[in-house]
Length: 201
Image 1 (cartoon, rainbow, N blue to C red):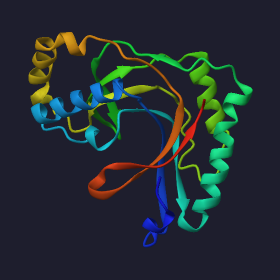
Image 2: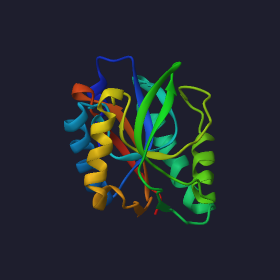
Image 3: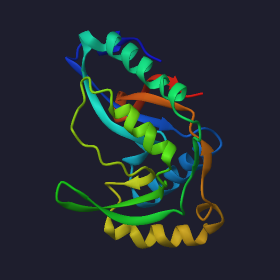
Image 4: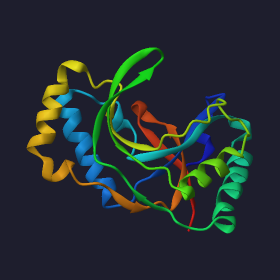
């Protein structure tokens, strides 16, 4: 948790709204991200903690930061009071696929996350808070990224062979309880850092 004074020279702060994996799956994914980053020279994903993005982000004026965080937190924690709790997350197997980014096809290595009724309800609840919303994007395709964006085509064979050679690690699905929602901002050297965390328990 950080004080807003760290943003004193900025007009606004961009936050992503995510749920960070708990241990031990978080450590497992960090190790995977590190190995793939070294192997494929793909460093974009490791600037984020292993996470699931829950909704589109926000762009908050620094002068409104305290009130925004308080109101967003109050709204977020109401979810558990009004929705049945079934926050168990079970991923699919690790997948290497393409995605479209600004008209360009890029590679992504990810764990797909099935959209349960509980997860769908959480996404809908969080989107009801519209203050300082960055875009009107509402599509929701939850996943956990291991590498993306700078994962180049010429390194894909190396990545595929590495995954095959270490299938005892990469073939395992992830399973954990989602118990919190966090606001993260881009910090030093582009690494995303937690500003506040709100419990769903």
